[in-house]
Amino acid sequence: MTATLANRQMVRAAMAAPYLERDEEHDLAVAWKNNKDQDALHKITMAHMRLVISMAAKFRNFGLPMGDLVQEGHVGLLEAAARFDPEREVRFSTYATWWIRASIQDYILRNWSIVRGGTSSAQKALFFNLRRLRARLAQDDPTLTDSAIHIQIADSLGVHVKDVAVMDARLSGPDSSLNAPMSDGESGASSDRMDFLKSDEPLPDEQVSTIIDEERRNTWLGDALNTLNPRELLIIRKRRLAEEGATLEALGATLGISKERVRQIENRALEKLRAVLSSETPEIASL
Image 1 (cartoon, rainbow, N blue to C red):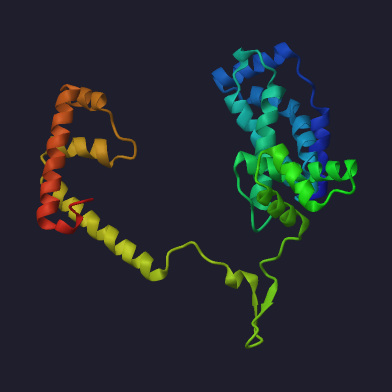
Image 2: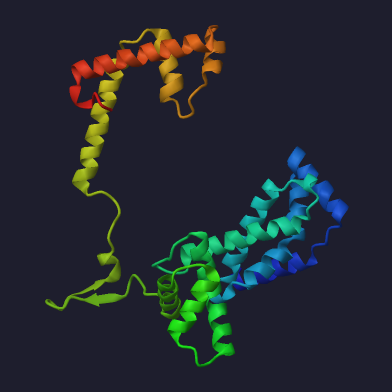
């Protein structure tokens, strides 16, 4: 099945889905929120796919496939369904619109260009409104220079004029392919642009050094932990080494002691660890 055919079928299914009355929408939202009723979720989302398609169509001029925009909008729709509170007396479409738009805009910012602009709220507003504001200003006064247009747009959106100029240049120019050839002026050899991209990853020797250092620290810590008694070790593992540290209250209930006693044992265990690490491995005493 081609992407075009799939998109057409999706649009037809969305248009055929029945509209929801306010009471029915509320009941379905309650069923999904309280009981995780998948059928209720399906009815809510299908009834609002028209909204997703309509929103995606507003961003089709950014050069990304309409099907991808709709899919991202659907992600936003599901997020809205997960967060919607039916007791607030707000229609779901009103609440979902923000999530759908935000999801589509985020997708465009991530994929529109190799070199992306900032992702702050001001930069997003600039990215998505610059073309519209530029066209309106040029229509109102054809004599305006680019500099004058940039100043007015900057004042309207609350951003720097320099940011407007940079974004305008980026939106006006075509994206460059990473596979585009670049010629070496001296040797005449040709390489792809991708070969000149700077990697954010550490150099190989730095990676190896980091791995060795981590293994050494883990060995030191393991040896130090062996000096703790079973209760001290349990508290340190639960409080300091677990991904989500246990509370003093929870450990106190498990061990049958007060939370203050747990704190005292934890502090004593930490002092033991510091003493062992300082005496045997002074270079990490400050860690």
